[in-house]
Image (cartoon, rainbow, N blue to C red; front, side, top):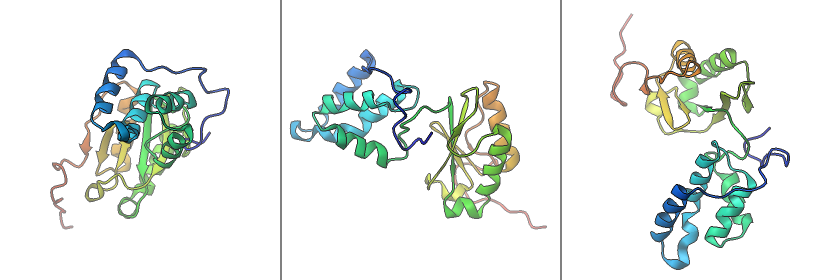
Length: 197
């Protein structure tokens, strides 16, 4: 099942309504825009819908956003299918997004990918049978100086090795919270000290 195309009909929920907390957030978000520019709130409303619905956007959620913003459903679908941050099909509890852009690839993202595939037993676009992990490749996550890196849900893990990546997956599988950010011990993206042989 592709995360970039709407899920099949049998997976789609029959209805979607925002909960009270999100409706309050929606009113606040929309109030930031002039009355003739409220469609500009589309991205944050889609994000709220996705977060409320276990990290994926069903068609009914997109319909609800279209109604709230008084825009055609096709406009909502155009945006949701364009941005890779929106999942149009169910994903696992942990969405593992591996950066495959040139800086990460040059620093070993292919090895990180292989470590993930080996540990999880899945390929890109697949979810583990226990619905814990979904694996996907993405383009530039904006932490090139800390390559290779992955984003798992909303958290970045950087300066990865096969061992550190496997450790992160093991911790998540056990319900532990792995240390976020650089796994090499450096702070942020400060220069990395390379020891000469």
